[in-house]
Image (cartoon, rainbow, N blue to C red; front, side, top):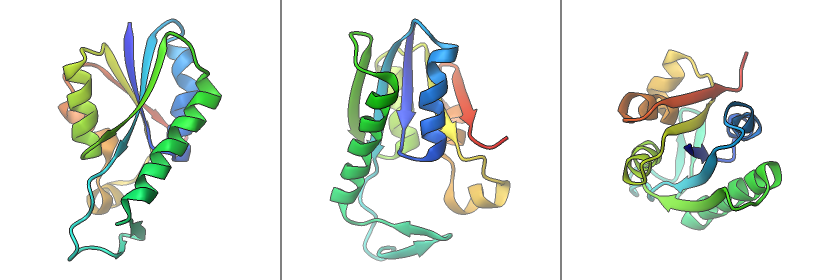
Length: 143
């Protein structure tokens, strides 16, 4: 079985890293951190919905690298795990990557936002669930 684990450096992502082997102990894992495209200048710099907009792509790339470093600490390194960084819209990139490489399932963490927060900020997990052609496991970090 081949599983795509999407990580982003958040606590919910870390929780998904910690739980993926419980659900898929023998699976081959591809761990991907997605660097979003730069924001258009009229929107950035600033804050949207209480979240800072990052326009410096080096910061986004560093976050992706740190996310993979944490994943390597939690999951280790072996022949059955591949780590990489992709660039693009996070939800669409995860879905496209899963389709292009014929993954059996996708695992993502969820912040557990309410409907209003999702409306303001969007949700990668919601996008992936609604657009993926393979099963998606969403691991929530909130009870």
